[in-house]
Image 1: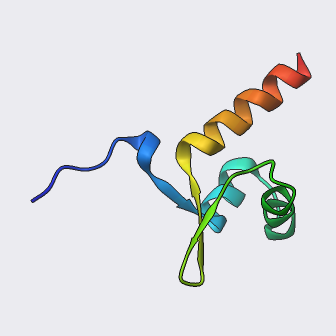
Image 2: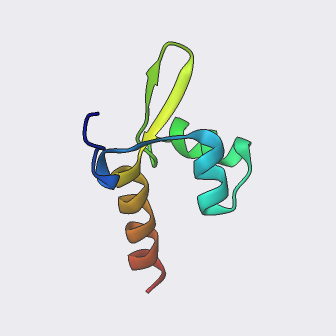
Length: 65
């Protein structure tokens, strides 16, 4: 079998991001629409790179400090 990608190369589904941030589906899509949370589409499926989510959270922590 092939090797797994590093966690930073994982692409998360919207429900996974919702759970990670404790936000509603609407708010996650709002962050995507406003370009605050980078994402890409494959077919009809939206994915958020795990490292983009990590960067988003780090930026929010810096803003709060």
